[in-house]
Length: 197
Image (cartoon, rainbow, N blue to C red; front, side, top):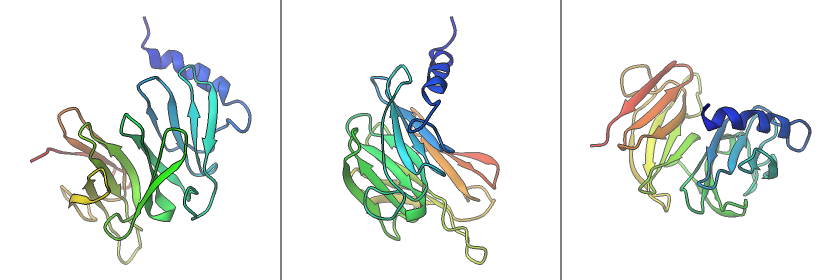
């Protein structure tokens, strides 16, 4: 018997055959416990798209722009497994939080948040962010963050660079069952693992 995700993909490809359910350079995905698929459809469509467990298009939300609920490259997406969807709105340097139907709940932004490129929610509800920075030639940046459910920074680590513990264009982040944090770097071309203290 083949794994379920191999069976899911053909249905999704068929479902995405024509607008408005056609992707435009998607960047991230997550599955809900009931099998719904949420996609940050970032570079061209600038939205979040939602599919049912059979891969059929349900709806989408978001428009290009900087107003609340709008996006400028929604680059990462995650869920707390309950009622919140977190979107790393990279171009607007913020995290936007929605309910499962796409209603805006909160916006987290500011220097303490930086420019989120990727986001993940740990089992304990803490939100992990890879701040890919602005990547300015004269002042590149990069770091990882752990936030509580209210958006307060608990800890941050790393800086721009290619040494251990540094990030060169941190692109995405995830948390393992044991609490270890994994960060992938686009330009650095590696995955780093960080163990909780």
